[in-house]
Length: 464
Image 1 (tube, rainbow, N blue to C red):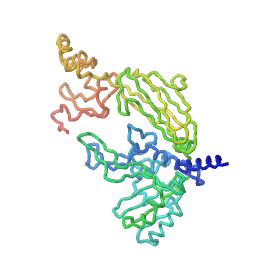
Image 2 (tube, rainbow, N blue to C red):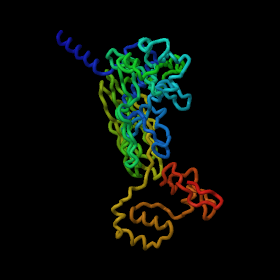
Image 3 (spheres, one colour):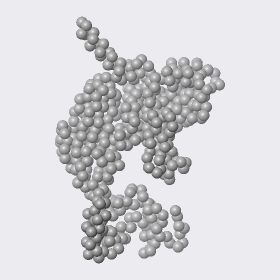
């Protein structure tokens, strides 16, 4: 009997440590919202609050924030950060959980717009100096709040903050708020080093609602001028069914996964290189489950190795058992067969029925050997022997010194995709540059427009 009691006590302690699904009787829509919010929370620190202003022309020039609007939780990986301010996080949760777009297809509403919403979406609103005291309003909002609600506060500094109430998700008997925020000084972009520092504690935070953000102490403070409780499930979202991904998140609660590639999200492999795709699976729930994983060998590659996978043509599949609190990885390796300039796209994979992030890597040329280039005795005589002229000089140097065949023999063919040929001596930059495989301009970065006008007709103004 003592042994049975000991086992039961150990199980109870385990349940108190690991997160659980909410004990509240939630609708399917509420469960979808809660588990989607949790999915973002589990991707910390790869989901970051964004307070750094970056512009197309540089830093601090009246630009816009880097909100990763409409990103899925799976888009956040170790080599690619997803950015979300508080309001965009709340909107992303609803978009991914129910397909409900609070931006109506445009930009997501900021906290100021959320605070001024009207109609069925508003459960209650408090403004300082109104009929209710802050203490009375606090008690009311605590009694009305339900999982899936969005709680927005407005401060006397004319700033605001939006949070998603998810109920008791960690089994401590208290309801929680998940919200994107940061504490301490903001991260800064170092223009000299080209480094984008992570925000101090910038991430999706989990706070006991009534002890912190929705407490009387917090809401009665001098810096709070009002708050509003929004319920999308009573308004535009009420007729939205859970998305397929959200339904799977409910089936596999507290599940997170990410797919990365050995060359990195921004990497450029060469033809003949090996790429290893790794899928990390994590079960943070209190129960065990088995996760089905599927992958498709990307076009432009050939499968080299897929440990423990079932292979059928270009399709790979695994069945991965995960105990409570356990993480595992599966991986497969391919060899790049596509020529330089081709984009290798890894997409269509799933884990637990949830689509993975898409990885795109442009195939580069062979990596030049700088040491060989410096040893002129190894290649200079061979270049001179060819007596090259014009672009042939560059072509010969690359070929003999670095083993890279640029095929730069026709200046007009090289420049036409980059510039509008006005006459033999005048050319303007094009608005678009072809970077198709086999094109000489595959070397040029996508979106690069050539800088200043190279040559301009006499009757045209020289533009910066």
